[in-house]
Length: 289
Image 1 (tube, helix red, strand yellow):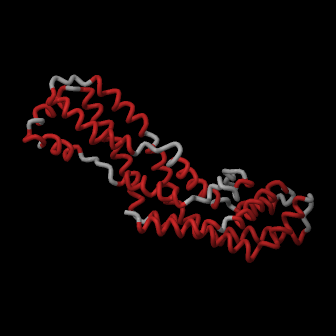
Image 2 (tube, one colour):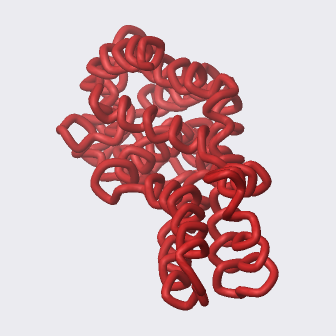
Image 3 (tube, one colour):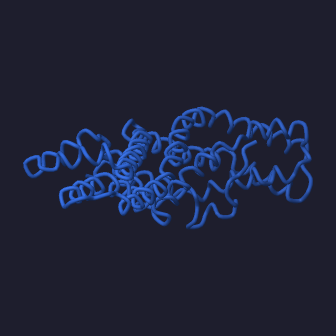
């Protein structure tokens, strides 16, 4: 059974992993676009630098590439990580925003199903479980509800798998940014710059590649919390009620597990704000430049 990845009681408050503000969605979207448009072509960089000032930087570029190890390290570390980030972020331009919206809307659908179809039974089961005893009729209701909700959400879980893998890979890749940027910065004073032309080449290279890398270092306060929230959304909805019902068929006296599952499902009642956030995100994503 997948563990619940956040305290049940926090689902309704402002720190809920489900509720992303419009500002958070926009920041995430803007960050993904930055990653999508990272420059990664070294040949284009060489052409850009060497054709400046009537080509007088060509000789300096060639010498640095052929003879200066720190320059090459700076060049290829920044290029390698930048390329990895760009590749890992491409899922954002291949329909994933629409999938995120769709999956978030499916959470709302599950919420409606719980509130309309199973709300009273859920509360009855929870009350009996908290009192330490489930009647045979209540146990049967619990198993039925588990299977009903699990069957209903199975297709959503399957749909989420690709996006979950993409986000996980992206999250891992952007974790390389800090180290790569520090290594590139460390190389600058080690480069054997011989004249002002080589200085211009080094400065131009660092500005074009390493500084771009610096701009996509994920902010601990603005970007990483949003990505973590998105991860938690899909971890939460993958909570497998069908597996729980199988466990309960063998051990219907495991009341703590029943209570935890019911509290998780009932907490969805308080998440109607998701619908508005999803709609705002869709509108903002479509209209953002």
